[in-house]
Length: 206
Image 1 (tube, rainbow, N blue to C red):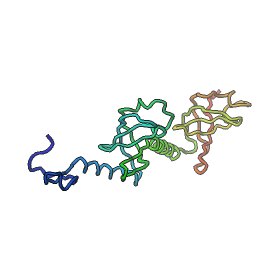
Image 2: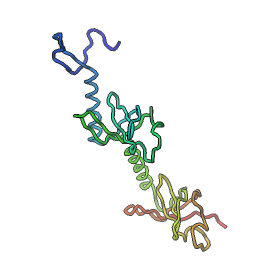
Image 3: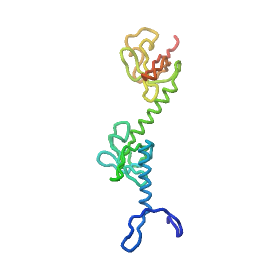
Image 4: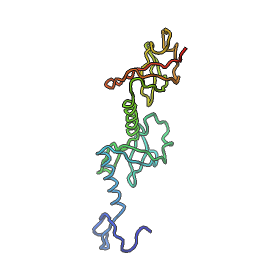
């Protein structure tokens, strides 16, 4: 079904004598070797590959990259705690290659590394796109005595000082906002070195 007489193909020599005086070849083993080369290359240049989660095993799951099976530890399946791996079975995941042992035919993948890398890219894009006087939307996440921290995207917090939360004097941020509130804030300052963003609440005109 795959080939016709006269086709030229590449194959790997498995045995020089299969017992009948013939040379035993395998195209599949050649392809598997090429797949291992691709996995090893992804490890070296830290690029991504796509794998399909096949089945659960103790401590994680088995995932297939073409004809090669590798292991994804439970801790590397996601960037958050995974209670049940069944939801991942059958899924195609983008992963980083963590380790390759060609002698033992073992590979370890990490979906978590990929997710964290993408998250860091998005955070970097936010930092690069932020300028003083920008007005952005955010979510109030937590408080301190001196202000409120507002998430302005991808879990990047900026501080709204208590003096910038209200037109009137308040003793605590809770007097002005609550956790979970969606607010508009103005960027007062961006400190790239210290990864700090100073914000001011956009207050309605009285």
